[in-house]
Length: 65
Image (tube, rainbow, N blue to C red; front, side):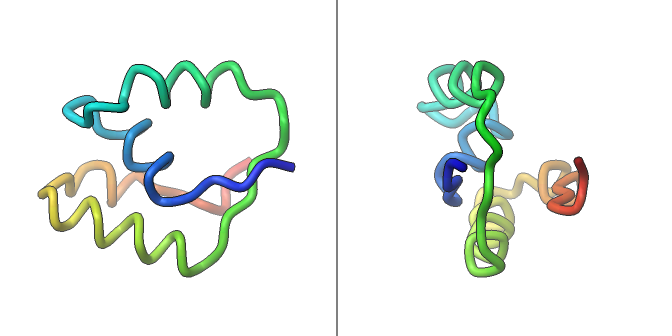
């Protein structure tokens, strides 16, 4: 299992993030099961809200898959 933190989720979802390309390559190449915590989910949603990335926040579904 691989732990994914708010920085990873934010960078994958937001094209304007300076780490978007690297994070997206990592995310889509990853074959390991990802896990996170409720604190990270809260931090991720707060990050997106602060950056006015409401579409990403609305589409964030931690229960899929």
